[in-house]
Amino acid sequence: MTARPETPSAHSTDALRPDTVVVAGGRPAPEHDAPVGPSIVLTSTYRGSGGLDAADRAYGRYSNPTWEDMEEVLARLEGAGQPGLLYASGLAAIASVLSLLPAGGRLVMPRHSYQGSLALAKDLEARGLLTIVTVDVADTEEVVAALGAADLLWLESPTNPMLEVADLPALLAAARERGVLTCVDNTFATPLVQRPLEHGADVVVHSVTKYLAGHSDVVLGAAVTSDPGLRDRLRAHRSLHGAIPGPFEAWLALRGMRTLALRIERSAATAGELARRLQEHPAVLEVRYPGLPGDPGHERAAAQMDGFGAIVAIVPAGDVDAVEAAVDRLRVWTPATSLGGVESLIERRRRHHEEPRSVPETLLRLSVGIENVEDLWEDLDHALRAIDR
Image (cartoon, rainbow, N blue to C red):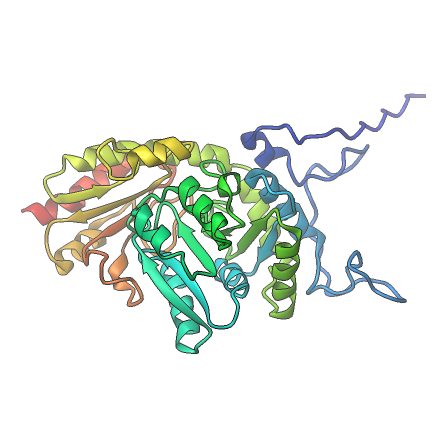
């Protein structure tokens, strides 16, 4: 009779490097005949009787094993001491963090931020729930000066869509000295490029929709913290406001994240090459990309990031009509909002009414995907040269 193979003993994977964690994390226990990949748990409730405590799942709005697989991986990537929290959208995660502000609290945030963050903060301000102070996040002195009566410092670095780079170590240290809560939106960088908790951030948020899921087919968000008390408050807000993810979306996001390291490596390399070529293009007035040596944020990004990401911003010559006509000529690039998918997306950001007026009207945000760099360049070059004629 053939002996049944021994069940492998569980071993710690805490020391694995990030590009291995995205592949190995969130897997079932290594037991004989166990599935290699996690299952999708589709349930609205759980069996049980008697009293309930925090360890009980109880109901589908409080807990789901499929969320937890993704939450485990994200926490390990960010270096968090607590499991992450998955939300129905990036904006749901942002709303949860803003709920940490006291009534009438003071929020300091970049003047150039994700327009959903700005719109939500302005809505809360209009209802008297908080006061916003916007700052140039690249000006460290200006940000520190605004912290005097602040309750929450919100940071993006690089910013959306202007790609300004904040001095995260300095700003997070200044906020901590003043007792100001901090949150960093790490969507653009991902934890493979930047880990704000290591610099002292209290909370990190992500639009999982973007690079983490990576295929433009789910809408999800996440918040990560090492503080148990903050996590309890965020989790309670998620449950109470019903901002929970669907199990299938959570499973898709984790499956997408398996290739995160490869996608980031390819997209960032292509973005750097395109940015260098665009600097010399006759129809381009300005290129913003932290990987360019002449970019205002280059030295800071090189010091605190493990790479420069895959978002490029350009200001073409010509008026709005000419720029939009150029976008319509593209065949490889897809004109669409969002970013971080395998396909390259391009968008004139000021088409959104919520975008700050300080963003140039003709600025195009390029989310560089994983296509062949020469195909992307030929398509872009052809469309832009039509402006120059």
